[in-house]
Image (cartoon, rainbow, N blue to C red):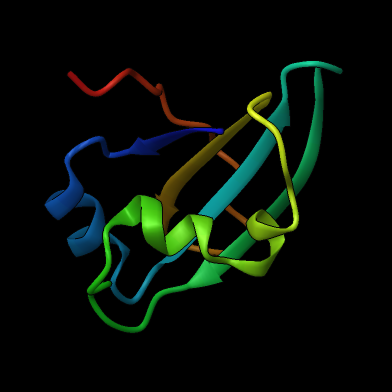
Length: 90
């Protein structure tokens, strides 16, 4: 499973998420389909890493295989479906 975040910087992601939402979309590279999508409201700064916080969500834990790409980004509302420009973290 590959994880991608926007913003890429861990501290910036956590800071921007507080009192906003984190939208997550899971893409199955073997079928070319979106498997699941969900939004979570963030009330406080995450103590865990972004990756650990997302991968321990029950909707992600039920997936198995290395053919999934998990994209998570900060949005200001539940109805904001804008997709940011993701890039690989160096």
